[in-house]
Image (tube, rainbow, N blue to C red; front, side, top):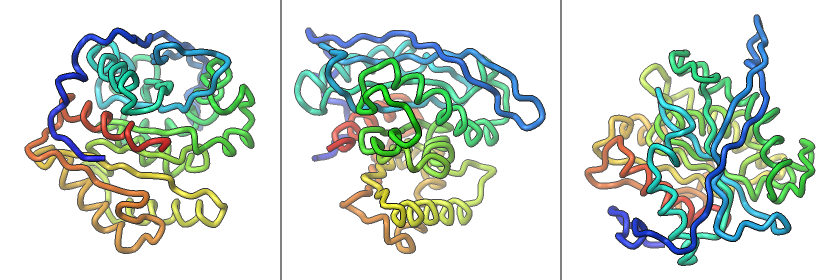
Length: 282
């Protein structure tokens, strides 16, 4: 794949073969130690044109950034849907299901970001994935037992932007590595309150433990812009990680895509998604 730094114009034009975006609601809990409250939450689900419940589809869980909701990718920026439609119609990526949930708890956007990005791992594993993959046609084949979700991890990816990128590391990689084989952290890692050495250690320990269990990393596709406020943070972590983590190999299961002049905005994040979908599940 050849990287581009501007979205191809064709991707932004109306596509005759349109996918659909529908609302999906599910029940979960706060999973707080002191007060475990039930919650009812929603996500948006992109289904590719011609979605057929008798077929099986790879699935990407895709997160927003700080201070917004699950509406971000598809409702606030509907051109994301146009890009997906064109990519699939042109064979640039395979048809897949994309789910955009929220790590916030039912509209509470004031919660501590450091806490909710990591804490989301329980909701993700226990409630969101089983509910979604019981309802839609994924490679789990309606069997959402933990054993089968682990067995089908090669068909499941996780990506997110900004705080969603931090969630990609914290909730998906560190805590649920056995459920995902593909990762797309877009514009972020440990954040302003984080410790890069701790992040390096966690990445290395997660990938080493996974390898010992026979769960290889298929690909980690890091993305950022060299003018992005989160660039130095993520670049620093990954540059420290690569030499000390034999499970991570440039060009085989890892790359760091950088947009020259790219900043912390949706133009960049749509480009990150455009490239990630050409790598995931291939």
